[in-house]
Image (tube, rainbow, N blue to C red; front, side, top):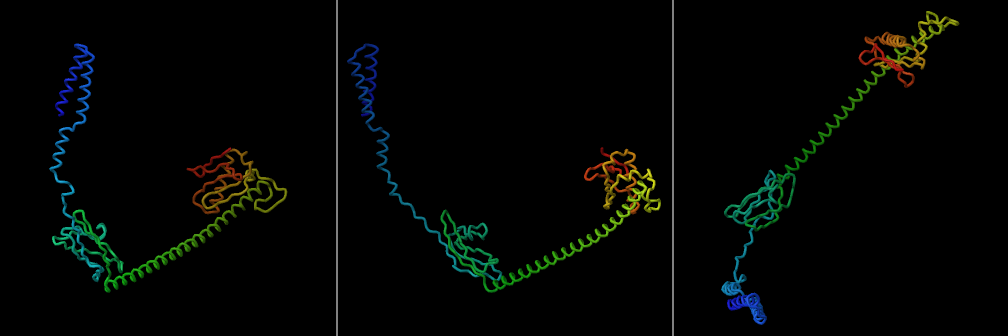
Length: 327
């Protein structure tokens, strides 16, 4: 039927072309167009040969619902509900599952894991360690199926006794370590206190020594200033209307000389800056000489000159008996 209307469609197309191009005729053109339209409509409504073949073939095929699939069997897993450890605290768990199934304690990452034999029999171990009793999970997997069961595991009496002994020993060891640590801390503290005491005593000795040196330097400075102003005689005795000694005149600008064990600090008046570089060098060298003499030192210590907190100069870094002065 579809073939007939296909021929009608072709004839209509030829007639329309002939009535328009070769020999124009409105009546024949309209008839040709009508045949084309009718054939297209009928062809569209008719079923295709492929659809008919599918319909016929579908009648010969059995329905999906009529095909039966074998039911998947449940994976067996037989294990004792409670297992007691050996004397070492090790629990041996025996059971039966599907042949060649993967069996594990928990996920088998931390716990023991194995593969059942051809009869489905397996054996797993679990170390109680410091536990007296625990509940663990046994998992079995085979061909996409799985089964789990809970097992209560306990220590036997001897293993429990050994565990208690270990705990007592661990407690004693901890106490012993804490005692030793405390004793060491006390010993260290005693040593530190002793060192502090020694350092304190040494500092006191040093302070007394430096105090004595500075006392002698102060007396010497007072004598130099007395001679500079003519207030004492050659023997250091006070006099009135004495004649000033110009050789000691520059000592008038010195307020104090202090030795601290490493260097010398000299405090001066602002008029110190009026002295020449040679006079400053002479005064600085004399201050070092006093300190070396009264301190019984083998080398001249560095010297620094101040007016209050203002630095006026002092010893050079590489040569303590040479000076740099600031203006």
